[in-house]
Length: 359
Image (cartoon, one colour):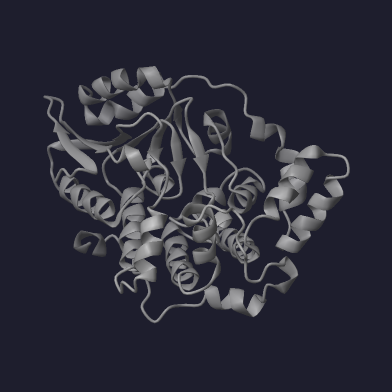
């Protein structure tokens, strides 16, 4: 099921066939469209029941980016045009995230370059993630008045200490070494060695794939984010965003990192910050399916509220970089409104192994 956006190829070998998914929308940094998500869902469903497919590999044809996220600009335009199917994007995307996490065959993501937002959802849930020195990981949604979705709360809540809350609120970028430290990726490899790894995977029996990945794993540089773990815990292991700001203000008196972090947070949507922290706190005790169900509720609420459209307009459409958040002050965020963001929908997202075959 090859399209102009994704090449779906079967690499045939006597040891078993390899299903190869290559993202090739490089001019848009492989930003995920609705059609790309449906293609991935359909192809994975087919390969899952194909006994000749031993594993699936997903990669990018563009060295600049694996996938920069969902096609937010197109989503924004569809919603403004009144397209009633706009929420189907999230139904299929979050189902795809869950499918990848539950995939019964090895699902191997080769990350080279920018990997953000929706790109995280089609890679890190696969549990066999190979990243190069070019990796730039982030969940930057609070910058556009949205929230860290695609089940990222499940991943971030399991990072060391309060690192997940820091990443969710700030949207800061991590490199290869940082992601190894954070427990977000399993294997590191030089970008120049990716073609050789793919050749080896093709000629390897299914039960030996993990051994090949382990043997290919290379040491990384030291993690910069690890050096900040103590102050991250001090400032972000707090029950509210207000308390986080207060701790950062105290730390900023003697620590430039805290001052820079505080200044960065002041540019984000206050509503997004409160939602993201609440989301991470819930994710500590939720399954991935529960996290994705929460994401679905939040996506509906954000797409019927102000800040998402204002953030996209200011940062991606008009590019004035001066979003007018509503409310603009953290202390004006109505916590009853935040509670409503998390409330059940009349039509919830239903995720189970049984209904995956029908998407």
